[in-house]
Image 1 (cartoon, rainbow, N blue to C red):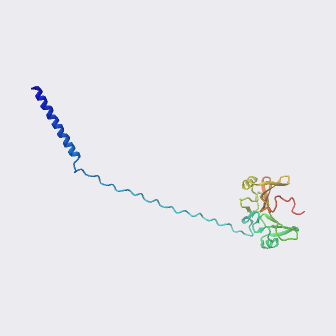
Image 2: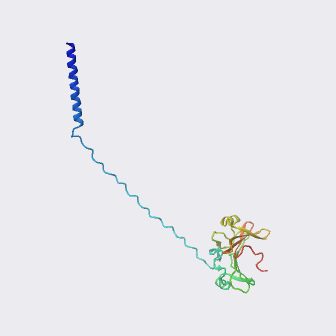
Length: 218
């Protein structure tokens, strides 16, 4: 008898386990389960297009015939005094300057507080061959008003500033114990000539060759 009781108990346990499994399967497959609601797609906001900022235009400095600080030095000339132009016409237009003929073909233009300008033209001809700006600091160290090259070199600039502005600068000649000439340019367009004394630019000239004249008259 003990064996029969044990068999019945085991059979009943198996039936109960099977029923439980069917119940669980039925729960898992029931059609009553709710479907997840669809999630709305998230649309990224469009990136605003930046409008490029216009670069401000720098107005060029107007050339004032009476103010040499507004003049630009190029291989073509200095301000309104251009190589190849009429010397007589240029002198007549620069009414703020006093003119003095040093010798035939050499005319100086001067005015208070400004660099003096020297025009050269072959004797008997009117076309300007060269233009020079000349000026040294006074006893108080004040440099006269000066025209500037396109790279910003002017009377009173240092040798270091000159060399930095013109990497192709080359020595040309020596006019005195502490006076050294330097030039930048070429035969096709002409030369910018600089006279340096005690590491300071004291003369800037434009002509068709490299070199500082030791004398303009003579």
